[in-house]
Length: 200
Image (cartoon, rainbow, N blue to C red; front, side, top):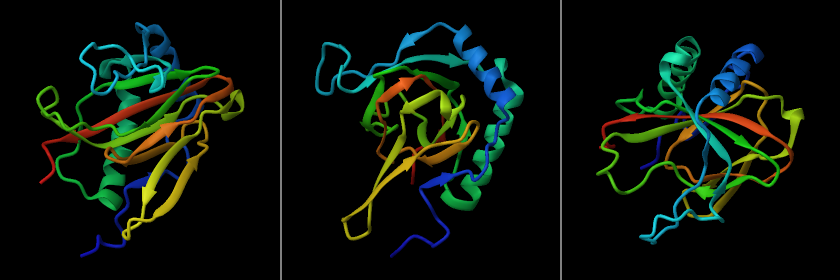
């Protein structure tokens, strides 16, 4: 049995959903929040030490109340994308957005946005989103790549996304993806996750 032809697990919005001014608002709020190292923990290790080969970036969290109007635009676009392409049940924002900066040499290796351990996260991420907040002329490298396979198990290819400022891509949170190393400049992005009760 195949999925319906209209269904997709990665949807690139054809035009920016945020204006440059709205993008700058997110950047200002994000840089004003406490900055953290965007690390991931080593798999299979109980030490809780970060994996230097997994991710290198800086992040902060943008509270919903700090950007309520702009968040509303994003949620509306997510709902449209879900209705037209994903068809998932029980989708809502339950985590605030993550503001991420990738400077020269920063990256995020292959990963998915959901785990198998549901104890710390009883609500499940189903749709992930990334919006480029700054002008793509301000950096080189840093492409978002999505890995995909065909129904026969063969590799269909890697989709390299060079987003415009304010442009969003929505994709299933179980989709394996990465951010290539930044060669020059700084890539600024907003990442969000939407979901709810576990898949049935």
